[in-house]
Image (cartoon, rainbow, N blue to C red; front, side):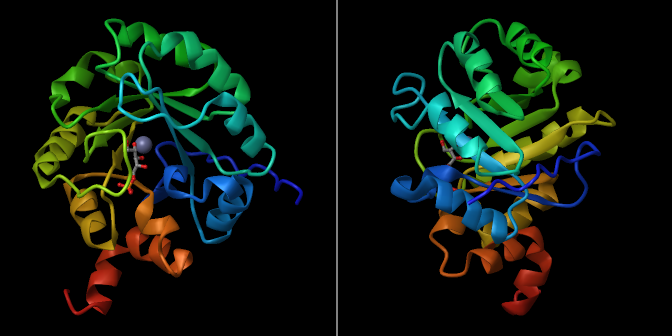
Length: 238
Ligand code: DX5
Ligand code: ZN
């Protein structure tokens, strides 16, 4: 298969609700095909979860896998680093083809430096917040941020239940962002049923692993999460 021409987003943050399938829930024996499949199903971005078995209790994949997939996909690559330290690996992910690089506020003492580093490499910089971390942990880097990612599960595994107690934090981050050009991303337990809660609270980007890759109809699942109100209406929940 040839790689399609990259269709890079030109406005930021992108309008509407962005759906970013998380490759963590894909068939790891067929990652290239899975990436192409969700692109054809309407994914806006591809979310790539990088886990080190240290910052989170799981190990996923590294820059070599990213690089291999880069040749197969024109989707923006949204790279979520759940690794500590992050800085020594940022350049490798940038070179491998990341478009956005997101580091956790809890991953080290120099979040501001990490954001500067990502920006210096010409990539969009993001800060992620664990469920136990207050919104204010991102406050001092907002002027360096292109994305803020609010975790709605404890990071490390797909398929966990959405933590409703994070909705207030999503709304708080939305207020903190104000008029800045920052995408507000939510990650963990997103389904057609929880998507509308995240969007109502202020999210513009929804990461979804299980709800996309395990769906019998991935295009329908993506469409339902992008238009949760329409989905709920069709289910009689309007
Ligand atoms: C969890 C990851 C998520 C995960 C989401 O640590 O950051 O991106 O893949 O999976 P679901 O959508 O199944 O909760
Ligand atoms: Zn993630």
